[in-house]
Length: 197
Ligand code: MD3
Ligand code: FE
Image (cartoon, rainbow, N blue to C red):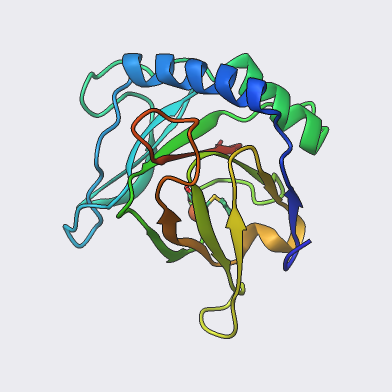
């Protein structure tokens, strides 16, 4: 536990990581990665797409969940079974997530400290699966400011943010390039599973 965040180190064996990556590649083929713009008009350094009923989206109008891909106009592909299996194993919930956000980090990408609060019901946890290069994850507090703690996330690690941890500030400070050979050409993929509506 790190500030209420449950850390399952190396939850996924390497073979399972490879199989999951193949399923995510199929998601990306149907729903290509795009670069969202913040409400201040700044392009994010991560590229992203989603699987499931809802996809996370941001533009000058703000952050929100959308039912179709912003470029293809098509619904997002279903969440792969291997990903749903991880949700089931670490949460034990009967309810499945309705959004799997796929974040791709190249060597320069990062994600500033923020809260995940665009979802309707914070009693559901958020689950994160890391694939590829390692990332320096930072977790703070529910209120802005105060102390933070950092943790390296490696390929195959799974985090569960539930209960009091659901609304803590968190972010990714940096990626360690070439720390994993899972993804050809390098980079990190983070899958974030949420119950949105
Ligand atoms: C703690 N993604 O997509 S995952 C995000 O690695 C996001 O791509 C990061 O933050 C990433 O919103 C961090 C770990 C994570 C995800 C959601 C959380 C930690 C969290 C929600 C509440 C508290
Ligand atoms: Fe987040």
